[in-house]
Length: 148
Image 1 (tube, helix red, strand yellow):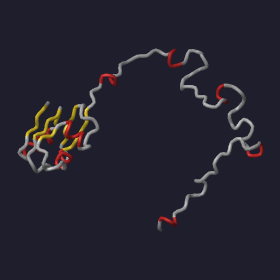
Image 2 (cartoon, helix red, strand yellow):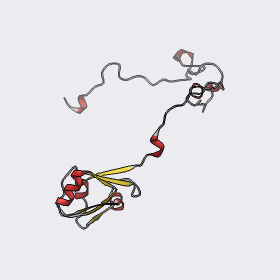
Image 3 (cartoon, rainbow, N blue to C red):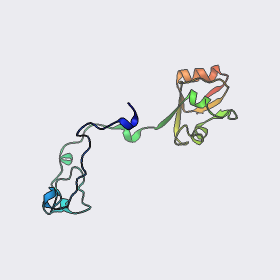
Image 4 (cartoon, rainbow, N blue to C red):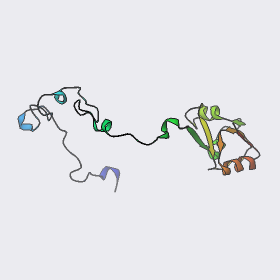
């Protein structure tokens, strides 16, 4: 079987719904929007949970419990193997260096170094956290794992 021989299974491809093209097409007149009203207008959208001005269910029910999402500490992760792939001229690695080389998104967040991969040259790595295997691999290569 070759790519140009592939075919869709029967029923996988549908005709595009052509609204407003006459009563005979099945989607004429109101174009599937029902009668008049807010939802029949263009650009209309009612937010989820809106009940027409009645007190919504989510406001009637009691809110209980605690969610720690607002107090989370975002930690970017990088592996020892990723650090080993940096240019040989780099001897000190920190969040700013990782961000500049595209290994993490933001140079301002905390970084945790994980132990996947191998390291062959000594590097001075500064991060918020290290896994036990990452710290062992960095020190075995003659480098330093500094917790900042």
